Structures are given as C-alpha cells and as structure tokens.
Amino acid sequence: MTTTPTTPPLHHRLSLPGLLAFSLPGLPLGALAVALSVYLPRYYAGHFGVGLSAVGIAFMAVRLIDMAFDPVIGIMMDRTRTRFGRYRVWLIVGAPILMIAVYMLFLPPAVPHNGLAQYGYLIGWLFVYYIGTSVIGLSHASWASVIAAKYHERSRVFGAIQVVSIIAATVVLIVPTLMHSHSAAGDVRAMGWFIVIVTPIGVALAVLRTPEKMVQEVHGEKFGLRDYWEMIARPDMRRIIIADFCLALGPGWMSAIYLFYFHDSRGFSYDSARFLLAIYIIAGVVGAAGLSWLAMRLGKHRTLMVASTCYSLGLIVLTVLPKHIFGPAAAIMFALGFMAAGFPLLDRAMVADVADAVRLQQGKHRGGLLYAMITSSQKIAGALSIGLTFTVLGWVGYKADDHAVNTPAAIHGLELVYLIGPVVFVMLGGACFIGYKLDQKRHAEIRAALDQRDGLTEAPVLDGLSGSQNEHGPFSEPAPAE
Image (cartoon, rainbow, N blue to C red; front, side, top):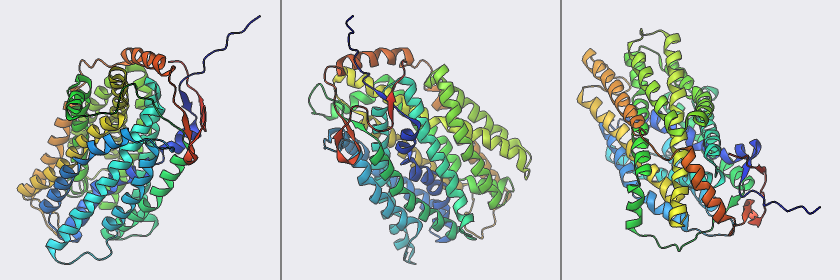
C-alpha cells in the first residue's frame, strides 16, 4: 500500500514557554505605560516646578513631532533583509536607545536649576525616549503578526504580550515600596532602575529563543506616498486607526490626572491611590485572558464594542460612589482594568488581519508600516491626553504644585475633566466597529489564499541570532486547525 506524503503545515504555534519568551519585550513597555504617563509628568511639574501646562505641552509637542518618524521606521523595517531576520535586528537596536532615555528621564544626573534649561532637558530626552519605544514597539508587534498567522492565534499571542506588560506595570508600582522610597523623586528613580534592568533581559530572551520566518514578497519593494494613503483609506484600517486613537485617548486622559483625582477629589492617600492603581493594572491580566477567550467566540471587533461600553459605564459609576471608601472603589477599578486590557490587545490583533489582506492584494508585507500607523495614532492620543488635560486643568484653576491648596471650584473642575473625556472617547472607539467586515470568516478566506500561495515559495525560519534555518524553530508546535 502506497502512502502519499502530506504537506507539513505552513505555520507553527509557539508553545507556552516559547510564547512567554517572545512576550518579554513587553516588560519595559508595560512598566513605562504607568511610570511615564502617571508619575513622570507629575514629577517634573511638582518636583522641578516646570509648570503643569508647560509639562503637558512638552509631552504633546514631542509626541506630535516624533510620530512623523513612525511610518519611516515601519517602512525601513519592512524593507530590512538580514541573515538574522527582519524584525529581530530592530528589536536589538531599540533596547539601548530606550535604556539611555529612561535613565536620563527617571534618574536625571544633573538637571539644571534654570527653568528653561530644565524644559529643554525634558523635551530632548522625551524625544529620544519616544524613538526607542517606537523601534521596540513596532518591531515586536510586526514580528508577532508574522508568528501568529491564524485569526484566533493572534488573540493568544497579543494576549500574552498584554499579560506580560500588565505584570510589569504592576511590579513597577511595587518597586518603590520594596526599595523603601518615601518621596516622589525616590519613586521615580526606583521605577527608572527597574525599567533599565528589565529592558535588555526581555529583548535578549525574545531574540535568542524565538524563530523568525522571512515572508517572501510577490512583487517588488517600491513604495510611495500614494501606497501609504491607499492603506489609510482602506475601510477596515481606517476604522482601526480611529478606534485605536479614541481607545488610547480615553484611558490615557484618565491616567494623566489619576493621582490628582483620587487624592484631591476622592479623598484617598497617595499610598491608597497607588494600591487602587495596582488593582486596575492587575485586573488587566485577568482581562487579557478573559477578553481573548471572549474574542474567540464573539470576534475581536464585537468584543471591543462590549469592553468599551462596560468601561464607560464603570467610569460613570466610579464618580458617584461615596468618597473615602476603599472597597467599592477597588471593585470598580478592577472592572475598569479588566475592560481596558482588551483595547490594545484586540486592536493590534486586528491590524495583523489587515496586514494579511494587504499582502494578499499587493503581494507585499506591510506589517511594520501598518503598525506604525497605529503607533502614530497612539502617540497623538498620548500627546493630547497629557497636553489637553493639563492645559484644561490650568484653565479651571487646578494647581499641581507639591504644596498647593486647591479651591472647591478647582476640584469640581478636576472631576468634570476626569469623567467627560474618557467616557466620550471610549464610547466613540467602540462605535467605530459597528458594521466591521474583516471578521473570522473573511480572514479565514484570506489565510487560505495566502497559505496556498506561500506553499509554493515557503521562506526559511531563522532560529535565534545564529541565523540558521530551522523548519519548526524552538518551542514550536503545529498550529491547530482553525
């Protein structure tokens, strides 16, 4: 009896140890999501006396300038061809850039006492910082879109990255206590050391233990401005970009003034407020797993709509709870953290689906550029979340100095600013996916066509930094049928 050999599967599913190793670059990015957005602006505004509005404008201006570099970096990544892979080398390049910038921002060796010089110092190192996060974030997300080819597998991979990021964000809140910090300056320095240490560890383990498949291109590498706008004009990508902007701006708006709100409006001590923030972040671990599970049943876009609605309702409930009472506030913060975990996770997984559709139509791998668009939208959102909120707080008369005393009218203004912005933008973000077409069924058709084409020109898998070819790669296992 003759046995016909079967064709091996084109895609391999990372095992749990392999997935964990690949997710570790999320450590510094997750820690910075809290340390930079919540603690660093207040540190420079209060400790250095730079000024609330001035700090907000600095963060906003640098992000708006820096976002112009993201598409350029994304295109360069997509065009990269080395014996070590496409995205692996960029991940390595980004690590020292980020480490230096974090050290200078969180552990400033000698910040001048002159106000203008302090302002210039902050702007300069913020720019270097955003370049570093762009390189690491873009290369990691683009690499993930290649590793996870299947619709549901993307929820799994991006969910793992989100869990690692959330764990890092939780640990960075605990580090000041472990290092016996008793001041805002000590908290920021402790956080800075943690991020500087985990960055090379996370990147090294990812690049050493994860295979990278080089996806073959059908057509040439020429790319012009018209192609860029064509991808932005795609209905599916346009929805994701607008939604990602809104879903980043809402929680970012809330994070920027979190400490002010919970201390001056809700009546919690800074230690209690930090503990509530830790609950919010820890809930994201459960939320990432829970929403990934839900996305496998409802689809990614429907799950995002559910999460955004529940998040907004929870935020409204928080504002009407009795003040000074920890238990109810902790329950709502857990629910908010649970829902917020799904925003970046599902958005990025859907971008990977669009990248497949683009590659099928154009024969070009544009994952880096597509993720650059998302990174740009997030930078605009991040810039506005700090710049707008700090500016508006100045308009309502709120003062952020360490020893400032705010009037009841200023506190009421703080409460309105804290509530209105996040609720409006998060609900708009969820509404973007009404009528979204690139669902599981459509993606399965796209993947089937790609797999049939890729089977004729299957590219090698590069194993580790040696650049050696390996059919399966370390920690790999056949992908289950979808």
